[in-house]
Image (cartoon, rainbow, N blue to C red):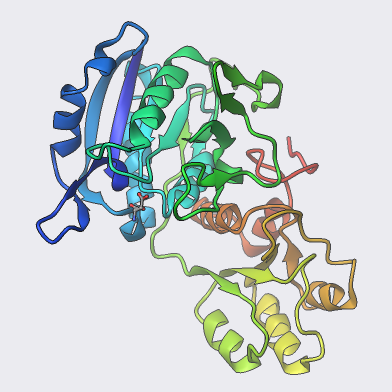
Length: 341
Ligand code: ASP
């Protein structure tokens, strides 16, 4: 088994600077890994390191970097049995979501992982994450983009970062874990996406980095004027609303702004600010008002997945009407109960 380890940056491979802060450094992770005897154990598959240039703190990641990662996977797809992407934790859920949509007919595992403490430090969680990712990528037929962190394997487009400090930093609040790592490695095969046909080639949809797609979290006191300004340049917006998908419906001007935007073709997708559960725009009058203004439900999608999906659909050339329809259908296991095809 042969794995391509795509190192994009992030804490896992960072090196301590003179001022005490951490930053990525070219060649540093390869040197660290070469000095780890455990990586020469028989259970560890062969691997090759591909270093992203430049290495990034994932706070600096952009859709162009997603395109770069997808291009490396596509260029080497037939040469490897699986792909491990080392990535910073801050935007790992965004990249995992984006790759899930960008890579169609994926028959091999693409596992994103990283760490909270750099590999160069004594108490690093990176060692376990890296070793488990290499073993899982080599041993299991996972036809999807996953995020592996701490003791669990998550569907990439369901994952969200919930802890800035804990070693179990990620969860997929609305979908069961795909795998767990205790004494045994347990993979929930029945939850995996179906394996695409062997003759269906991997198809990569690049993301247009210029697309004007955004996200906005409602807060008490938000004004119609502010929302209008935000919406003005956009073709798509993930509106992070309250609870089951509620917004201040007493503010007629705010609803008018949303209605005017949807009338000119802006796709407004309502997600919830809550970590668990999803949107049902029919529960409250404050949600029904959003639906009347033309906003659509993001159901139980994470805001990360909704944003990546909007970018993906517009990049693939779908019209606003088509994007509205597809946003409400399950394309890659990102939302419950609305499977398409
Ligand atoms: N700022 C870092 C990053 O996202 C945090 C991490 O990797 O944990 O690249």
